[in-house]
Image (cartoon, rainbow, N blue to C red; front, side, top):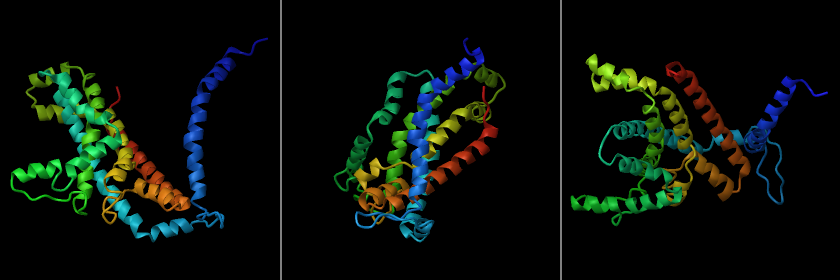
Length: 294
């Protein structure tokens, strides 16, 4: 006797899901739970093993001025990169979606920074930002402008990293907007022209609302990217000068691998995960009302 067909379908479905479930538990859920548990223990050494300290690490974090400096830096970094990258991506997608000479080359030029390795991008911009001999100071020198230490000045180091990040991310987001634009019926634009609607009115009232599902997806990715920058900082500034460019994930990296304080790094990681979860939920609840799924 064979088991009923519906039972076989359930078994077959769970067997298909098993590899994904195993990977999800092993590389997402288990590390998250282990991180939360580790944040409740003290720093362990070869002589003195770690012990349960409860919320002591969180109290230390609240009293840590570097943590608050890094958190503020990361918020400014997010505010500088997220809206700029999305706006630039939409503008580039609108440009390369229309008929124009060399459109394929323009698309490739916009997308090229995305496929470059992180370390390569950091070294390219390190050449741009080098004082006196860098490309930016060389061009500024043609106009009689004195050179500037872009990465050594606390006032300019974070904006310099923001510019580099936008340059690398905007082309990636452009691909999603370009794909979304190509699925919008051209009859909508023709109808808007017949009604006498301007380009800006058509974009604001018709085009952008239809792009909201893509915008929600891109926004979530942009938020995640703004809180996971490590490679560029390691090459360019190492968080300096005086933590002016230090971001939360790089501070976690420093705590774990430079100071070997894995318990404090776990505490910072829990805070990072909580911030990302709150922002993701906020995006879904706030933007979902504006999203028009087709």
